Image (cartoon, rainbow, N blue to C red):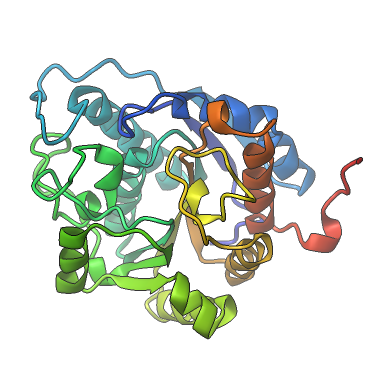
Length: 311
């Protein structure tokens, strides 16, 4: 996909019920205030803001103590899956403004349906402190934002959210980068299913560029589509404190920018999630601005193009 000529559709997903705490529903508004539409427009992109999804809870879904708030998370999953599929199928680039990470159940599923119809494999780059490969059977908390990778790979049994037979993502086509917090049973599932994990030690030892070349070469060789899911907690909390699940020792500002720049150079990215921004926990919009800068790098801005802020 030529990201420079592809129209971008912003999709607000004010979902916080998957996380177990309040605040992430304000993320889409914070990203808009931080100037995401302006940043992409100034880079020459055609940007449409489709507004926020506002689904009503899905009455047909059960109350499951192992998967909290399933009715509303399931409703968002259905609405977002349909919206992402619509945008991608019409030749657009879906950009999700989150919202907690459970939204990726919908965004990745929508891209998986689109990829299946085009006959191309879907790869997922998961930039996160957490692997999010729990299921209702393994999750210590029952919070669905810890389950989306397992769900899109068909390994989290959350019956009835999307139709049976939906396109799934091959776990071996998932690349998780920056991981530094994994539950014990989750670790076993990841190893069993062959998810590609580059934890922070891998980044320290191999370097970001080498890891990204491996990811991008794999996607390119398969003529695949690439969905990128960027969680605020991928970054070190000193850089981006506005998240409810901070884990020390995250990616640096430059490491994250290099990833986005290499993604931009590759021309392989078809869709993007920006998730887990919690403005209530942020420092005067710091994390929102950083996320906008990361998105701008993906869409073609380079460090020497970045406007200098007044002191």
